[in-house]
Amino acid sequence: MEQREHRKHSREFKLEVVRLALLGEKTKAQIARELGIRVNQIRQWRLDFEAEERTGSPLPTPCAIDDLAALQRENNRLRQEVELLKKATIYFVRQLP
Image (cartoon, rainbow, N blue to C red; front, top):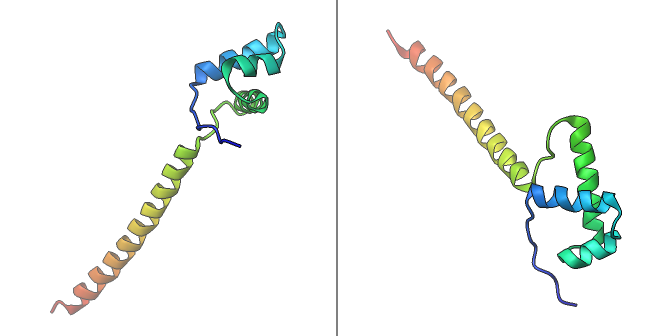
């Protein structure tokens, strides 16, 4: 079975697909077939938008999660450097006559 290429869809596209599905003029399967997406993807997008509406903020994307993890690692490294510099400062101040 051939695996489909992963595509990113815009927020507007997702909102329009969910809106079409909620109107009920066509079945979700028909909409999915016409647009070349999976039926379960429509459900997932609807759940994501509902969660976003409840919390008031958009859900983080995988890219944003990776960026956050990288920033947290850098923040930890910088904190360690600051602690080391504090210790070095104390050491050199004590060495002064």
